[in-house]
Length: 378
Image 1 (cartoon, one colour):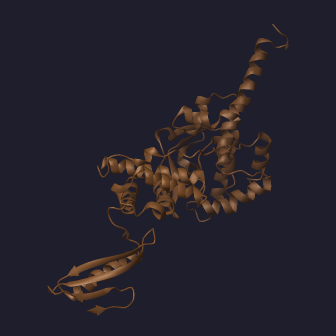
Image 2 (image 1 turned 45 degrees about the vertical axis):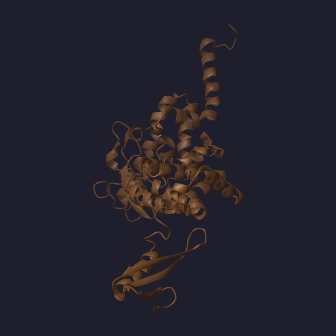
Image 3 (image 1 turned 180 degrees about the vertical axis):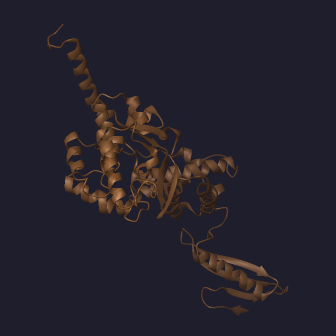
């Protein structure tokens, strides 16, 4: 028998003349020790196989759980399906949910033995450990999507996630800015080299990625329009320009004076920096003319300007501000849906129902003044 150093495995020759090697690869999601056995015609062949197993485990290129386990299937699903076929942040969201909420609890369960009762116990464990309803909802949605594909592949007969009750998650309250708050915020933006992106966001409703991916060729100053065609995506520090997320997101947004001024001011600053539109097509760039990073923008631009203006909202709430301003201006909800690029009318209606109450009151008052200008009963 040839005994190697701790963690390198044990190798010995069997009575039939073949060589056998065994190596420990740590523990699985449930704390159970994981070992692997390999065979070969020579000692050198077995040693090479053990070294390869150890290298793969160290680089995390191979799951240490059995192929037919849930964790093994989820890894293949993420690597071969989601990472290849999705071009948005879906992979990042799914991978996080698998790593944090699924594998540590039920990853070692054999895929064929995964049933509704085990999933109910899994959700109970998450709740006992104080995972939020939102985290639990993310875990269920991720596992449901993975197991739906397993059903299509005929790996399992049905999706056991169907027995789970959906955790109730309260929608985060939309916090739009009032008109006066907008004026204060906008007044703090012009002094910063790319601060003009803030009033542009509030007055067009463009998403952050759409703003960061906006090019001068997308803007028609003569007719006062922006053609929204692409968005900048940042995943794990890497940038990628991609088409907008859906057909409805590819849209034309009409500019009003505040948004037009913001773009013209930014163009003047870009030219002064040497980033002329013919050299640097992107409207809002970092100091070297490259793509903006979310964290750097928030830390160096958005947070300081927001604090100076005395408002405490997310950047995404500027998009809600655009919807709120249009509702109070009496704009039809269908127009707002098209302007924001929502896929459906229902999405817009559900999101801004509470804002519509004030808008309906104002519309009713205006209607009353038309019928009865003197304010007297008919």
